[in-house]
Length: 431
Image (cartoon, rainbow, N blue to C red):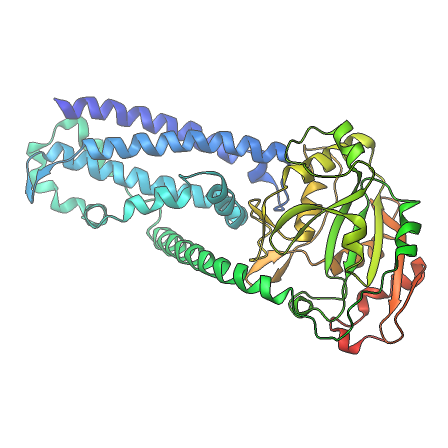
């Protein structure tokens, strides 16, 4: 009988499921208490999810094989029992996934969404076919009268139930919620991309020039190092309203094109001049490389910080930042997504851990707009808090300050810099 062959495949899948979920429960990414994962964690999780794709696809094939009726007439009660068993197995697998994801659920859903055509939701929505839901909810008592028509080898399948009915309702709610919110994000992203481009061009001032002088830029270049983290701000720009704190933008100094060609093999880097100095940033549209002088001429303040990491870490950091060239600016401020990046996200993720014992810049995320991200101003607070600790990874290097009302621009010290994070967000209230 055909259903006996299906039964063997079902039992084989049950074993596969047990092995898969043991792997997932013991995965390093799942065991972490934070949502800051190493490159190693992410790559390993991607490989594991490919096994889940195969598992769910095979389960779907078996469900399709176990068709038990023609139109509305039941033709095979054995297949009916098998199909119900498979559907419960399918739903229980989804419930177990969410239980194991636990506090990493938001990140994992986004991570899968970014990297796979077949993610958690793709498999979850399969179960919402009306005939599937109807069969899952059909009590076994309605099938018992036809028990004589069912092979005794299948009797154990009557004992299969949903893990937790309450959790099943929660799972349904979450799946539908994430589906709707992701669709809304696509709409918001489209609107934001078009509106943000207009907002960045709006300045509430008649002043045509910016305050940072060429003389002070040259002073910085005398002490600049490849991995420097730059915080900047331009006054009177409309985008200042939406970004909390005084400091608005973060980027990283890369040195000259001559240096980049010698040390990194990236064909995407074109039309750069050997002797000119460049930075990498995510702003407005996408991640790009910009000439340092041109970039700083559009700002009124500059703070430079530097990490004390070893050269191997610095090289990996620069390489990771360069790998992001061309990625879209993240208008939804969603730190969990690696597909698009805000300015601070580009830098912090470049300085993230690659493996378990790797050093990194550790931060705490904050809700902005509808996303979870990291405002540049928070980086200043972090440095202040770590200033008196021996294990501090980042330290003050250089500060160009300005006075808005007089137009003065000058090199300032560390003591004055530490007061800047308390300065007003809006330029109207600056001295």
